[in-house]
Length: 276
Image (cartoon, rainbow, N blue to C red; front, side):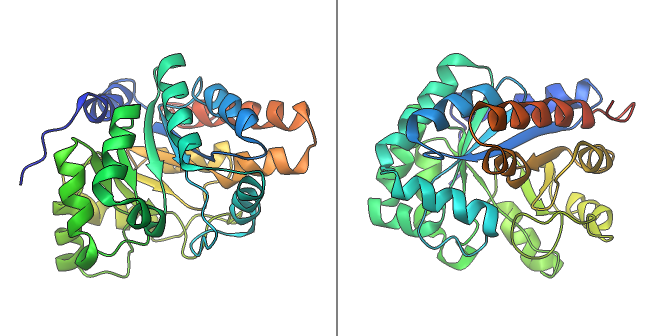
């Protein structure tokens, strides 16, 4: 079945076209609902949306196997603070009603399966999400989710590995919508070292397999790295570096530091000059 994108999904497509026309990469910011509290997380998400083209709203999960210590700590705190699925939907609606940012939901598969793929897709679409990123859902088991996403006009954004061969990557890309998510480094989120040396080549390789925008994340931690990635990628995704500011600096100072970083990242993704 061919996807007919819903209004929010079409906005994601436009966000990449707008960024490209402005000679920059699109900036996506990841942040989990419920950290440090539900109320504060929604305020933080709304504030980040003033600087980012795309907000990836994280659904806290008790076994975030693809995430490093920064996001693990944040999502554990969110769960301990009483996160519930309704808070995710409230956060999506809050971002959509107070900013022009497009929203993607980032989640592991188990919470989706527990709620039911069709119900989950219907709820996040109704809240205004453009689609979902489910990094631990393999292509071979993705049928129920892909059908539900198509039914509700949602993009499905895959996280693809450079170790996959071209045939497999082509099959994954054929089921994707909105963008392709290419890890900037191997391993879990939160890396603070250099980007993978093979990342530009991997992005080039993906472009031979899909016409969708290619965004790089997992390992981008500074405006300088965002600028580096923006030279060859359509989008740059940052999460742990923003969350780390709030974890390291208590109170409002941490939020101010995260927003200052977000502003620097927004400058960094410009292609014509490096971040100030």
